[in-house]
Image (tube, rainbow, N blue to C red; front, side, top):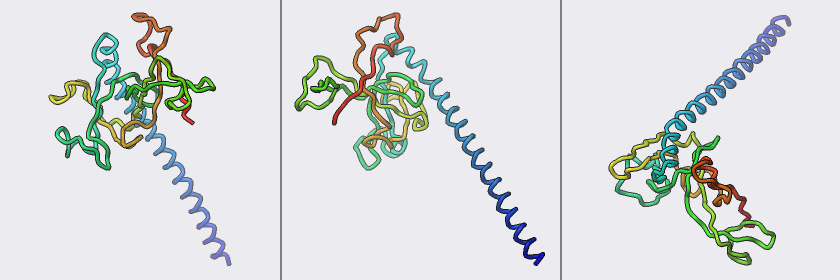
Amino acid sequence: MTCWILDNLIGIISIVVGSFIAYHVYFLSKKFDLKDKLSHKDAIRKIVEPILQKISSGRNSKCELVNVKKYLSYYPHNNEENRHGYTYFGGELKALRFDGVEFFSTVKELYKTPNQDFSLKKEGNEKLDFNVFEVGVIPYEWIEYVDPRGDEFSYRPQFFAQFKGLHKTPYKYLNYYIESDVYHEGSDPMDMKWRSVEIKND
């Protein structure tokens, strides 16, 4: 009887100790994971900030977004879309955000609904005399490398990223902007040239 109690006690202690160790190993792995992510984010920002400074001084904002999964096999001669997306495509660098890098993707016509909301839908809505900029956000952890000089094929900054976002692109989500009517050229930060708008497409 005593041996049975002792065996059970040892078993319970083993489970408690094992759970304690497992919890702390998990906690430490998450802590290191966050530290690595913040370190990677900081490294990307340090490369991109000088590019943005040059853009604010008049340099072209065009960049090339390169699919890391297809780069070694397809770049630069094959840019046909397959199940991994395109090999590369262009974007215009806009700004750094807390969760990623913003790129101008395209320009779209903008409409106003009867409820005075902004919409991209034409049917039943009033067309406005200005357009909206569609801006994609690439998370820092999806960007594996940035070459600020580019190569002999692009001659512009290249962002090597995972194309696992919207429609097989590196964009995790989209933001929409219109030109600000209170921006002061030369005195305001360049990013204040645009203001965010909410799009209703229901």
